[in-house]
Length: 337
Ligand code: KG4
Ligand code: ZN
Image 1 (tube, rainbow, N blue to C red):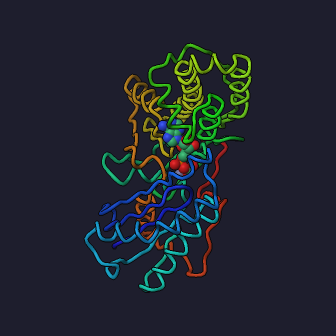
Image 2 (cartoon, rainbow, N blue to C red):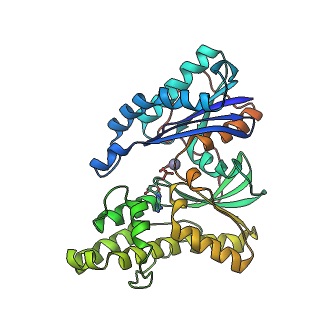
Image 3 (tube, rainbow, N blue to C red):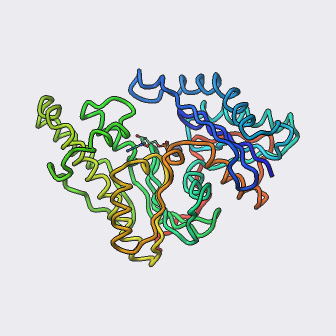
């Protein structure tokens, strides 16, 4: 099996080649242009994907040391994501699958974030819990097998990535807000300012209340105070958001008795979250899985490994398929553990 995988759901154009479950090559191009606008502009993202995709795919194939004729499967991100951006990867994948006469595999972006843990060693044994945290999702998932997952809880409003990005904007931190707030927090005191954490039932999350609390805080204190205390405020905001994530993680570990915990998605690059999880894991005897930075944010390697499992299960797409910006999870939602 030689799989070419393409990811184009948001502002990263990426391609990877897998030989079976072994990663052969991986190229990621991040679209820097959006920083001028303070956020991802969908129309510009689509155009940038169109400009880059051929070069990125060609580089990935060359780096893998193969010719396109040696490919046996083409995988693409089916959704969720920005429609125009998804269409670029999908159209390119479809064209190649048609030209080469090989099967097409449509991959769910969030399932792929979780399966990024199977690109490299150490890989988690099943079952494990995964906190999936990105710009559009916040979910606590029980992973029973590569394609067998159950959502234990999720956000009822904003995603935690959005909460990081919006808090960054309130603090005058430019785009990309999440990673820059993380950096600003590095030398700050996480206990300098206290924010009340809202209670949510079960394993669900809500970030809209805390976002409003940050808004009132910055308004009350004023611009000059925020500027002069930026690292302490950033550290306190990061501490609060990470604590909100961790409360449900602790509860799920206790309730399920599953002591293997992984994090996935863009926010899993957050240094505060990585540190707290590693420390608590050490103290409590949990087996903790934290992805390499290159596999946290959007990348085609995670699409490729997921496509490998789908190919093994015979899950292929018709050539006339289309991408779906709000593709539902291919997994079940459970009210109990
Ligand atoms: O998974 P991802 O790359 O794209 C989506 O599928 O949404 O996640 C992007 C999100 C953004 O909200 C970004 O600000 C956040 O992940 N993010 C971070 C960090 N790196 C990326 N948030 C906090 N700290 C970081 N270091
Ligand atoms: Zn993502």
